[in-house]
Image (tube, rainbow, N blue to C red; front, side, top):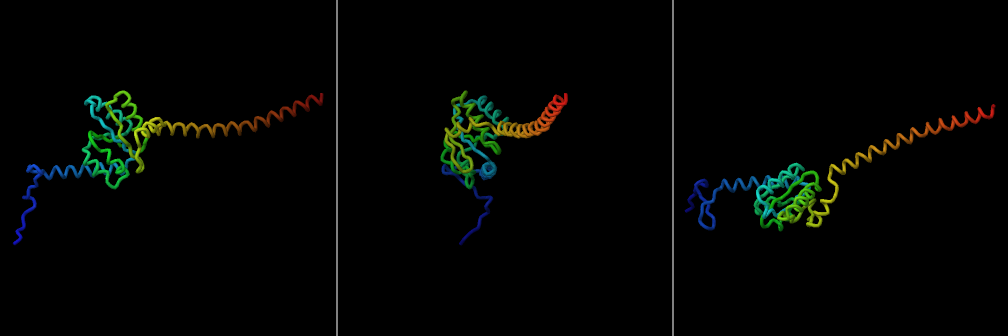
Length: 197
């Protein structure tokens, strides 16, 4: 005969016989959902190995990334793997091993590569592992090449200066036509005055 039991009275145990807290499981699920949403919205995600960085160095790195509007999160690898399912980031799950933190940028793919590469030059303990952008894997060499590109702000500045130069040149050209015409008329007038003398 089947005897139903109340689910809330049932206690789960891990392989060592210790009681597992379901609230912890719920918290992990919330973290996975949050990171999954961030991965879906991300323009680029870069995985790093931060092993060997002290708290002060890690705080400095986080501050530099935050100033560039980049999130930097240390998350358990199993949670990163679950969060990356059905996202463009799933192509790099094999790199979520060991101490792993991810830099997430939502609009500028160059900024995190620049900040992380520059920081790694002065702090060799920070290791760039891999990146993912638009479902493609970016190797360490790809990330270094990306870091050498102009940032989004620099590109916008260059575009704006080009856009300002075109109307300026156009106005100067248009202004030169009447000025040239006036010079031709002045020349004809001077020539007629000399002939009439």
